[in-house]
Length: 428
Ligand code: GLU
Image 1 (cartoon, helix red, strand yellow):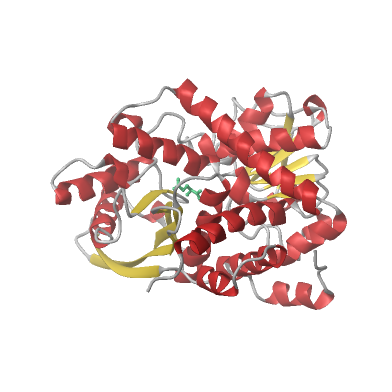
Image 2 (cartoon, rainbow, N blue to C red):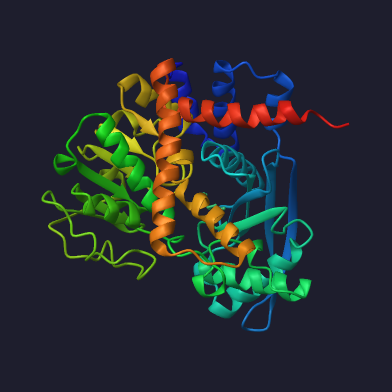
């Protein structure tokens, strides 16, 4: 693996790496290990299509505001585009493209019959009323209607969206199509074709993969300390899973700060950020810390599960964890990743660790097509099996090639996508 130079570190400090830059660098690195046709790599450097839409919204005060939304469709060689929709003020076209590339790899590493997509609206959902959010989501569904569909492109929740937005989205699409089409989005409430266990699944898979990594490094889970940045839709379930397995979760955080208990927090007692915002940093714990301090705690496992680009050239030298398992999408910049490799700190990547989300989305899609709901037990059991299968494939590459966990994961994913491209060929 290349080493981070002082110049790269300075450069990164001056310019925040975009998700697309990170994704392209990761693709180039994985390609070095594989005998893949250069034309295929070139195709994979670009999305198939990006749609930009203007979404007019009537605010509660009667005024009209126009928001910008995107849907990036990266690659569909293995099946329909799949990936979330985020509502966040930082959404950009580039970010959607980078995130859609990650979805292509995520689906491939899990061996799901999907390609990669991602979209979103440039909006702060906290500044909208429920009614405004509903109107915005419904109009977005309408603007994307020609692009999406259960056989074409299947959105899902992401940052700032959840089951309620998916329900509105499905309803708007179905009303226009004249029939109920639950398979157009995943992550819906179970009462309208959502899957049991979908909400917990990205965090649960982070827990399952962390548990495997702990075993791989021959640690005793009962002696393992864990810090989780972001006690929300991913982090809370990862923390609770590991707590249940006997690990000591010593720190968790929300946007306002972190709580720390060297004897281990009761992760069931702390209300997560999604259930009640503000309750994490407001919890009565022995110590409170900043989010930056949490990332630099001397723990065995660090799980960044909040937002992208939190482990950077600025703090990678100060991280004291022995293992990093990525819960958020893209929490580690390329330079930080190189610093961790030099320092011998393994980083298990997002596209493997949090892939439980899209895996249960696949289960949901199957349930919708078959109009038959699975039990929570079945979902969790099949999720566990799929995660172990992916972990075993990645571990085999780590052992065979002496590469990092990220490189190994990309090698597994890229070889599957590239083989599919080579088998199908370029038309016309
Ligand atoms: N947004 C989630 C992710 O980044 C889930 C995507 C999906 O379920 O389609 O993996």
